[in-house]
Amino acid sequence: MKVYSRDLRAKVLKAYNDKEGSMRALAEHFMVSLSFVFTLIKRFNENGHINPKPHGGCRNPAIDEAGCKYLIKLIERNVDLTLEELCSLYEKEFSKKVSKSAMDRTLKKLNITRKKRRCMILKKRASV
Image (cartoon, rainbow, N blue to C red; front, side, top):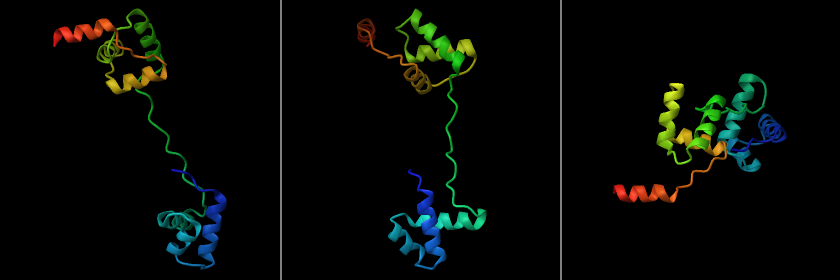
């Protein structure tokens, strides 16, 4: 979601304080949502400022720097490992269970592609 400029926030607040219209009318006039106008006024009354809230950030990756180095060495030795096998080996090494999704995200971050080899496809067909 985009952050509205401080200038727009100030204009909306000034228009509200000058009683130029209801919250709904101001939202339509400035082409913003009604909830934005309501939240802006509420935040100004509570805190005395119109600054947006800081970005929430994100979660820390499941596999840290040491884990990434381990995975690089592991894949260099055996390129045919599946995500499940990588997760299992990682868990044995670091005593920390990671999901296949977390492993896949880490491999993408490391620019390691996972191409299916012809021999792997033939093994799967033979087992079916």
